[in-house]
Figure (cartoon, rainbow, N blue to C red):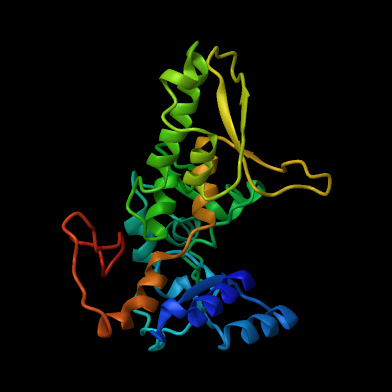
Length: 282
């Protein structure tokens, strides 16, 4: 984050900038104590603290350093219960919603999911549960899927998952070919690393006695001995990337004032509607 602040300063002072105004936006977890003081000094501004729960079905409290004119938080108009219900399909529901619907105890519940996280141990923990009522009257438990998380963070369905599947499928196919590097691999190791935005490597293993090697990609977290802490399969890696992502509705809110500065346009193939009311089309 400090490197980004110093980069902004370098660009501002560069002769090619010609004193033109430079807008920037930087997101991070909420900083405290000395870390916050140092970042405030480097950016020259204090951050705005915004929680995505005001704009989407999930929580994501973050600090935003920016010089874009901030117009304040919109009046929260999201119906939390309807918000999550509109995301989940096939009769899945939030556990609090299920409890509220099938028990006589009347007490308030938070219908929004907790923050999606990136570490292996937190991808599918108890906070990521959803439930479904079965024919015998019991509840089946499950975890928010990749597509659930994409929608709740404001991404189109498949935006993350389709690209990750392509990478995994390509590498697994390559490992089965005698001349895999020449014939089936369309990009080299460095190119694949650039696609992810994270440093990683491959680990193949045989699972369920299948002759097909399964690929697991290493995350960037390493232990004190320098060894990689987590390896992810395709589904896990998609959730890992979403756990590191921006909340799109919040970014949209922060960038909206720039429409007064720059000419705006809409793109033919873009979807400008989120998957929850009042944004979704019905």
